[in-house]
Image 1 (cartoon, rainbow, N blue to C red):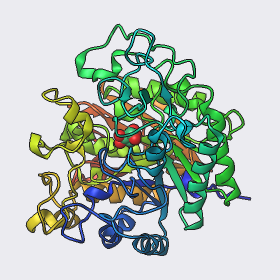
Image 2: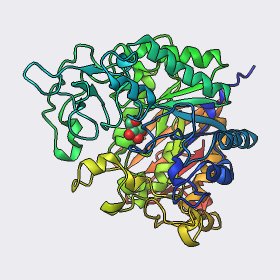
Image 3: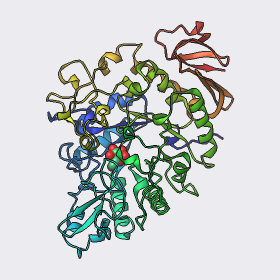
Length: 519
Ligand code: GLC
């Protein structure tokens, strides 16, 4: 008997950042009808699900991660009817739809916060985290905002500070108040009833900062390039024990709705990431693994990490890999365009669910964004540092017409310099062609999606591993270096990252070449 694994184990998730995907209304910013129009691109890639970054009403102080109504749609993006149509289309194309759930904070424009800040006696006062000034004056703790400056803002109306782990326009919700937890679970249920297949849960490590407000310790290795928030360890603000019962409650709700998927965003070390699987696998099915976003581009480092990750995942738990998102440098910029192709082969052949960041299938790079176009509060709060996420959120270049097919208006961020979807579609040597071929092979070969992982080789240049399933063994050999290398294992080459490569003559690895071989 062959068991059928849940879709999210064999599947691939594709992240859509709605502002940058496709404009259909002439605002210079993407929207839901735009996503609908371009869904065939996503389906043609061969992925299984889209995760759509926030689409809810928002003042857009943090790109929609500052939400003023959890169950509505931002008018810039469209209407609930547009959303329903998008879900119907996606499902018709065989794509699941995951939304972004942002539990740790609302926008300051959310009516809950308006009510909370109105008076100390407000019925919703305790929905947020309000504190008196420290005895000598000043903020109640030394905690820092992820975007720079203190995590506490003084509100003169009621003479108290409120907590915000991110921008001051993103007040932290108080999950210790059971009414908050209940209201937020209701939000999830509302979207399940509308047909969404799951959520990516945002910044969940911040859900329950220390109730005693103990100061975070200084990080002795900090340098300004790390960003101002990293000057302190997050000992008392992240991954607190009280987070996990809330994660378990989210999971129970997902199961009660027929097993929806929860993907958790929590940046931490591997031991911390493991906590989000839940002691009895009652946490997230997929706590994001960000190693490939952060790691040195070294075979030894990646191999050692994969071994440790595989060993730590609890029995019955499932791995996952991420190489880019709307918060981190594009992989092609971080490691160089030469290596971006072999990087896609790595992402799509490791054991575990890959999440593909929109545009990485085109080899998009970070683009410079002039100061007057900056949108990211992190960039705006830290001028002159080069910090910021706008360069990775550049609109998708669909064709080579005006606005690159993204918009008929002025785009909200500069346009990309890489070849368009249209141009790459007609070019068998393009990154897009490679990503499609990799995904097609992954779908055709259960060894790549479901197979076990065995590390075979790691030196300064070459990383190799085997994926086995029901007697079929595929070998992935990746040359991360810029010199030719011998093949570390024998096999019949099935796919190379090098355009035009004669597979019958592939008896070694070219510089920056990845090969998939049948053993
Ligand atoms: C997450 C999001 C990021 C956002 C932050 C606050 O890290 O990915 O874009 O700024 O949470 O919601």
